[in-house]
Image 1: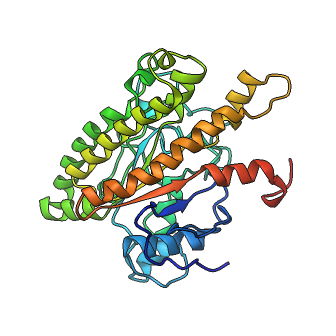
Image 2 (image 1 turned 180 degrees about the vertical axis):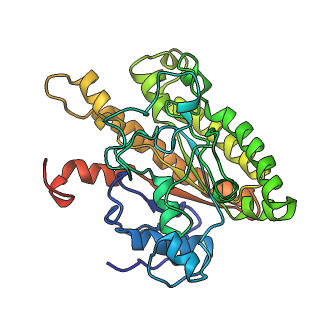
Image 3 (image 1 turned 60 degrees about the vertical axis):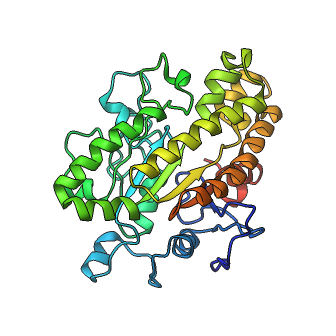
Length: 341
C-alpha cells in the first residue's frame, strides 16, 4: 500500500505514528487516517510518515545506510536518541547492577550473529529499525557501552533502561535507571558530542535528532496492578494524570537540553501482556479488559496532551506513537502476520 496523505493536522489531535511488534520490520501495521493522524502499514510507509512530519526530504527507495553513504545521500536524521524502558533499551542494563538484564538466551536469537545484546527482544528494537529506515545505521548502541566510537556518538544512542518508568517508585528496588535520571546521562552525552563535533555542529545534531520516548507500562504493572502501592493514593484516572505530569516534565527537560523532534509512545494493551494474563487469569490466560481499558484511557489523554505541548514549545515537533492498536490486531488476527511455529 502507498503512503497515506500526510496532510495538515487537526488542531485537536496529535499526529500519530503507528509502530508494530519488534520483528515485523516490513509489515509493521495497518493504518487509517482520521483527524490528522498519520501512520503506515510497512517500512516504506513509516519512511513516508517521517518525511511528511519531520521535513527531511528523500524520494529514494529504502536502502541500507552503507548504500546511502556510498551514493552520497545523507540520512534522514543526524541521530536517533531513545529514552524509556525495555522497549527501547538496547543494552544499558548490561552495565549496571540489576537483575533486569537481557544479555542471555533466548534474547537475541534473531539478532545479527544470533547473540543476546541486552535488548529484551529476539532481534532489533524500534530505535534500531528507525535508524535503519532513515538511512543512518543498522543499530543504536546503549550509551553506557564502554566501546562507543565517535561515529556512534555522533549518530545516536539509547539512554533507556529496562524496567524503568516515569514514576521513580517503579525503580526503587530494581536498580535500573528511572526516566527522570536519563536526561543526566543525556547531558554527559551532549558534552561528548560537542567534543567530537564542536559546539555548533553538536547543537545541530541535537535539534535534528529523532528522539524516541517509550515508558509507562512498568509503572502500571509494578505500582498499580501487581503491587498496588500507588492505589493507596491514586485512582487509575488520577495515576494516569500523575504519570503524564511526569512525562510532560521530562519532555520539557529534553526540549531545554536541545531536542526538538520527538515521538512519544502510548501504552500497549497491558492486560494482554503475558505476565498480566498469567497473574490475572492463570487457567484461561485471558486478557484483562480492565487493564486494557486503562491503557486506552491513558492513550486518549496522551493524544490530547502532545499537541498542547508542541504549541507550548516553539520549534518542536512531537508525535504520538500508537502501539496499542497494532498489538491488538496481532493478538486478534494472528493469521495476518505469519504461521504458528
